[in-house]
Image 1 (cartoon, rainbow, N blue to C red):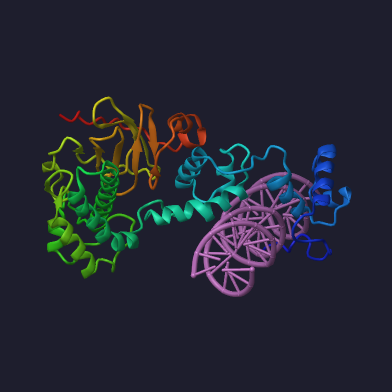
Image 2 (image 1 turned 90 degrees about the vertical axis):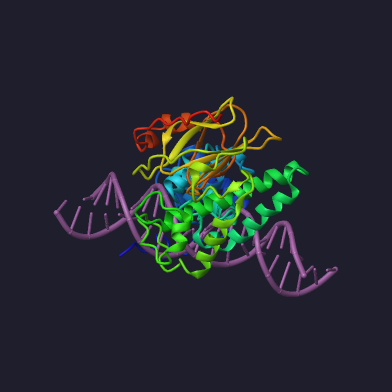
Length: 355
DNA sequence: AAAGATCCCAACCGCCTAAAC
DNA sequence: CGTTTAGGCGGTTGGGATCTT
């Protein structure tokens, strides 16, 4: 099956385009339009195959192409859309004015993909990488403990450590969800006590990965104190962990079936994150607010996403997104028919204000 | 300063789809 | 209705640019 190359028998030029060729192609298309790409090279007087001409035009010569670095907004757009659409580069490019699918694909492969991997996020699933979790947990936890020593000395270190702590918690929660027995409220300690957890009920297969090392990690975590809250780890017993004013734990939320998962969160005037609407596929979340800055950190407890919010704009978070989201996403998602059709009936969830 | 390693991206390749025949 | 073909898409790669040692 498959077609033979369109130009395999004609001895057409390959490789980089010369400025002269560019000029001929651009001039011809300006005057005549591209018409049939197959016929174009002959008509324009180019010793190239039509496919090559089309590519050169759409990826380089087209006058409406935007060149230069991707803005943070564009990066966020790509990350969000990739989380939803996958490697549908042309579909993603359709939402980024002046950017070509090829350019976005290249940018993804050379920058964004690596960034996700370095953040412990699987660039395919936009979920935390299991392998990464196992390898980085001890490191993260060591940093958490370090924070106890440094607390009160340097706010930047504290914020950074809080972030790491949140990351560690997210990863642990995710591990927990993977290893959870059918009983939804199973605790870490019960998992540790049971060295042969039942097959995870979700789609993340880690059968065979739950080895002694993992159990050791889980066990060690379940025994440490939560440095931010000054109380025993909240993983085992989330409902009993409310202590400090900058550490809030919200109850378990309903799990939804829809694979498209995003939700809208608004940093409220009070010190908590109010989820106004959105589809939720995570089980619970926590909000942290540093006492020394206005930034919030929202942690989705199955490890899907962490986010910092500034100001009062609404934010949309999709799984795997880790960073500052731009405002306007909610409008984008709701206005774009291709996305709004994917969004389920949005449940309303508004946690009680934290005392 | 030079050599090797790594990064980056333009361009190619092969497959898929839909329109034309 | 089956076959052919143009256009489009995503994966991959070659080689120039840049960085590191």
